[in-house]
Image (cartoon, rainbow, N blue to C red; front, side, top):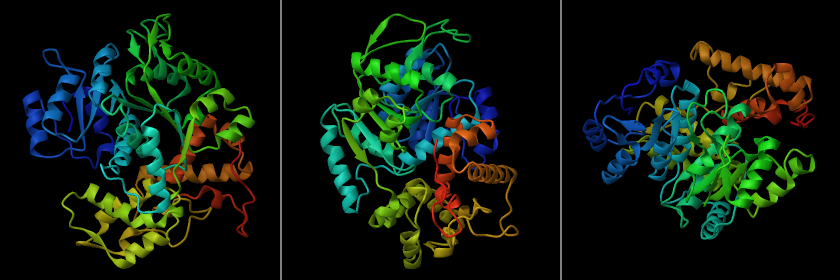
Length: 456
């Protein structure tokens, strides 16, 4: 549900990203509250200031009074940093700076989908998962920095949210930033904030994510992608517990707890000089590792049932025994995020209350080099034609794989050849993994041995 109408927002929603969204516009706060009372919405977008000076924080408070469980995102103009900060402290999930592009909304929708997997009762049937959440519960009682390791899609942000909710800071803001998803030219301003006139286009002061997380928790996802220059600056902030906005010499005191996550081997990055040793040890006070889904098969079916309930609250669908067995046997290269995609797809394909094995649309085998998108379903071209967006994505994936093979898995050379930054290439590779593409297998030799691996 979006509130109220905005030209830039309407343009975004006219894009293909909103094709499957149920959108409702409202024009007043009472109408918004009435709609929320009628049914549960996945997301509510509200302006930083509405009508006659009503702030987003006040609207969020009223939504909480109605026991609204929707994710709240604030639409902000560049001069509304103070209002955004207050809204985040009241529990807003994030904010979008107007005008924004469709992929910004898509990132939030993906984050929200992952966060929906969490609940007051964590799904942890395997011994590995139980031990992990027991450790997380213990470290949550302290303010120690935590470094969460794990493959893409294993639920690192869910674990970070669990630590925040289990800590003394649970009533403070939880502010997340994906260091891999933000262009290098913007990440410094987004993380540290800026003063008016700090750079071209900075028409007003804006608080950074560090400042917004004050009295709460800051979650730095994909910390290994943070540029070296900003690693130095972040280390200083963590040591001194104060931050200066870009273009300002005023020091702002911070009271934050820092959680970081990575799908890289940061020890290797330190050894290779790509990550600061002192920052690594500052963040790695208490390491936790989210195991891949293939290593905790006891969690697969309970997680699938939980996701099924999230996407179908009325709870009428269930998996057949054959479907459950297929879920257990599949290696899940995209982990929980891929499982979530499969569950949503199965709900679309199922013709009744029972979800059968074939309706999972899992591949009979992992993707081949000539068919990296085969993991999205083993249907032929006649029965499942690709639309233009899917065709472009498949062509892009095939080009990336072919170029990686040509340069023996060397990411820097591949990025240079493709005309993108290494960070952008890593993000695309991460997206491929989330969609079930087994990169390492595609780069392996024909005899199954890993002749090529991803290197920098």
